[in-house]
Image (cartoon, rainbow, N blue to C red; front, top):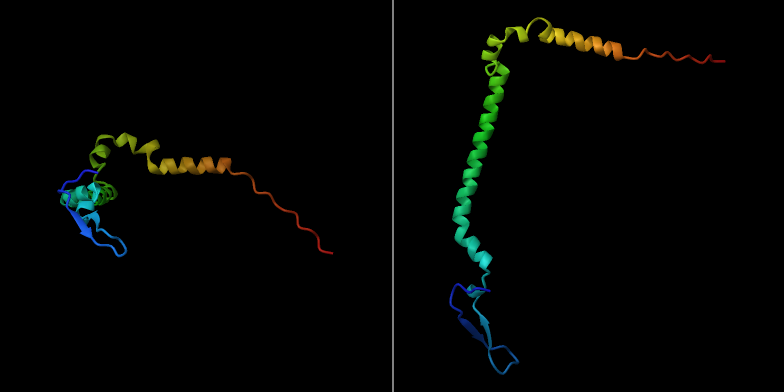
Length: 119
């Protein structure tokens, strides 16, 4: 263990022992990790605050992007530049019709059950 502070022993007389027991002071026993954490905690607090601020900005940005997307603001220029890709056979209505036709073709015929005649 590396001692940052000078080693200052504390002598205590223990009952039943003829001589005092020497042990290090509480301050000297503090682990190097605890000293490091204590020394760097203001820096860690500042980093944590920066991370929290960045997360808040990201959440606001996400909400802003979603709002613009629902209003159609993000694709407005693209739609003006490419009208052929969103009309005619590429329109949403045409796509829905194709999906309905495919589902109808795949859908199996309903089987009818024969009812038992009650006696």
